[in-house]
Image (cartoon, rainbow, N blue to C red; front, side, top):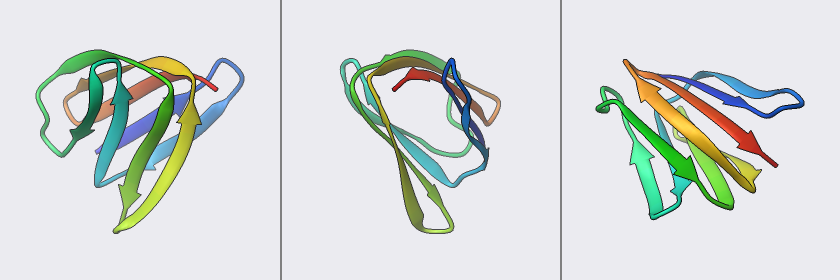
Length: 78
């Protein structure tokens, strides 16, 4: 899956990932390969994404995420 994490100031991450966990407004949720299309608001917390079993984190205040055809785009504020 292709993940992009963007803030108004810069591109924080772009690349291939195995899975992503987002801090959704209604609780955490995970995105895996071939996930159904979704748009969700994000609340304060961490975006956790895995690349080859290594977990990376980006701390956010709020944002929005869109998943469509194995492309994940997260627009966030830090």
